[in-house]
Image (cartoon, helix red, strand yellow):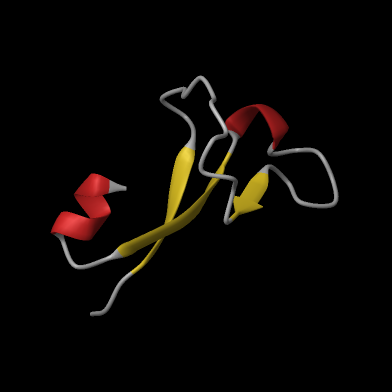
Length: 52
């Protein structure tokens, strides 16, 4: 989140590689609780909103 903020972007969620093949969300989590703790993997992706 800090890196996105530094670039003028907004991190709004993530996609978990472990759950990417599971319906209905395919691992996508938007606006997760701030207190949520998770183990990040290199394959996980952060969902970012930015301007061109």
